Image (cartoon, rainbow, N blue to C red; front, top):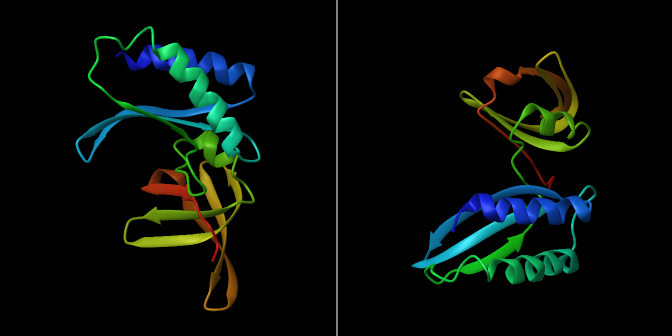
Length: 148
């Protein structure tokens, strides 16, 4: 099955239901093929919304997957620690707690600002609050984080 077909079906559904389409991919786990569809919503997404999206997609895919090997459908959220995949997603995460990896260093703190390609993090360094500036070009990985 062409993932573009799945994307078009889900994008239309997401647009109508104030959701955002995060990712679509096939993965093989423990010998089983799974179609993973990740959706999100501002402020978080609940299980009922995910179940409705799963039912909708499942009914639509029946007309496209007749000649395909058996697979499982999984509609879920990207999770509390979702990756921030681009500058736009980083900008939308100002004031949130993030995990940032750069060469030979890892930071966790609140994203205070993202301006002129520079992230400003407020971190707790041995009990002292410190502001750290990091060039977005130096970021190897950035994701939301759960503060423990």
